[in-house]
Length: 134
Ligand SMILES: [Zn+2]
Ligand SMILES: [Zn+2]
Image (cartoon, rainbow, N blue to C red; front, side, top):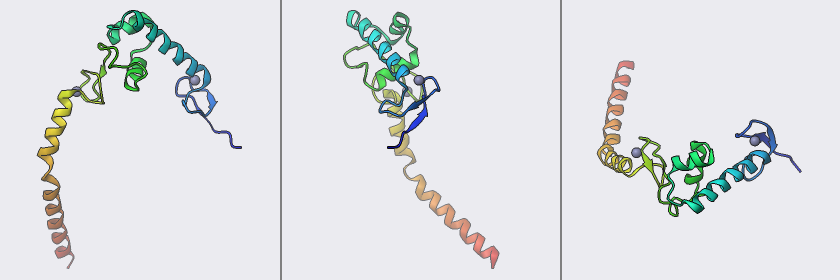
């Protein structure tokens, strides 16, 4: 049997690898944090992420993680948000807010013909290169 060990991303100590990728003390600390969030949301389901942070003392980035991973359900608690990965605006699903999703979709349409032009440029410079070599 091989023992897989790794550095814990939470505290940096070496631990035996497991499904959660955290050492047992970080994993149980995270469980405690998650439980105190759920306790708070039980009484105040309309808390925002900031209110939750103040009430539980859990770091905002950790809360964002909980919401993104679905451990704190953004659909059950309607005021829980995390920042969009592009503009930092509050969002509640996916990695990007609605406006960024729209922008990226538009950009995708606009840049679609570009690869064709790039291929043409490449072919032209290659022709120049070979003719110079001759
Ligand atoms: Zn740890
Ligand atoms: Zn955005």
